[in-house]
Amino acid sequence: MSRHGHRPRRDRWLINPDRATDTSRYRLSGWALWRLVVAVLVLTVGPAVADTGALDRIQAAETIRIAYAPNAYPIAFKDAEGVPRGYSVDLCRHIVTSVQQALGLDALEIAWIEGNTPRRVAAVANGEADIECGTTTMTLARQRRVDFSNVVFVESGGILVTSDRGLRGLTDLAGRKVGVVPDTTTERRLRPALSERDIELELVPIRDAKDGLERLVADDLDAVAGDRLVLVGQVAETGKAENFAIVDASFSVEPYAFALPRNDADFRLEVNRALAGVYRGGEIERIFQRWFGEDSAPTRLLETIYFIYGFAD
Image 1 (cartoon, one colour):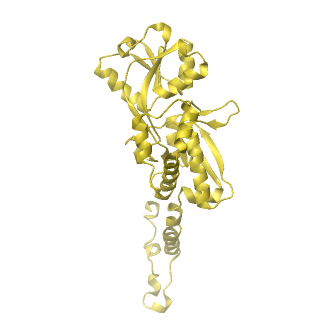
Image 2 (tube, rainbow, N blue to C red; image 1 turned 45 degrees about the horizontal axis):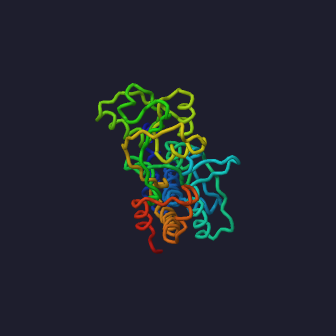
Image 3 (cartoon, rainbow, N blue to C red; image 1 turned 90 degrees about the vertical axis):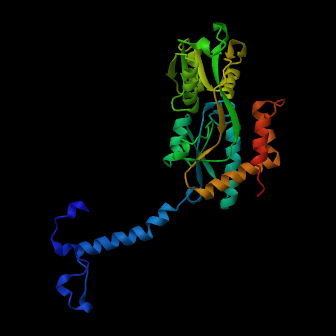
């Protein structure tokens, strides 16, 4: 270390020079001994800590930490009793059951962590959460920080307006205030779509879709951009669907997946094994209809995803 650069030369010798002519009486100097101890600790303890993955942490704590979206109905939300629910949450609960069985645990507690998409991705990236389940689009940029499960849903971007304003397309939004959650794929893909059409408007940061809807109703915003299905879900919660409309604008495709810790192949495999079982066994149909209606059905693209990722074990 640089702060020891000016110590007397004898403190840097591995072998005491005063005894160098007698091999039976070699001994380590104090500083050299300390350096040797540190090196041994790095070699023996360091790799064991580094190799500890999510499954080891979960087994030791008997708790799995899940970051979820509290205001993204019907994908993920917190109900009136404060219980996480929704399409993604149901999938994550199946993953929890699979992990519990794989680890041979009698019970596995869930510690829920609330947050919008940037917050959930950050929670997984910094080790605060083991997995996140919500409305997170899998992108190459995000894979610099986290890994992802197999795809769980495919969505498109949308823009919500109130029906009394006569806004029908992107060009109608010129000069308006449009709410969007910062650092999301919606924001990153909406900007170039506006630029290509020479449309200038103000993008206003919002916390999540629920916050955007509340500010839209309060006339603080003219429109809210986000994942189309989540926006529709927020409208459904109001019971006044006739008061809202989705602008005719297609600017993104959003493949949802669950963010996972990077370079943890064992945990990723267990997550994908659980998802494959849900897709393969037909449970995905019951989950889909539970949250999108008994008369609803996955799109052809989504059915293909279920088929592709319903791997045999």
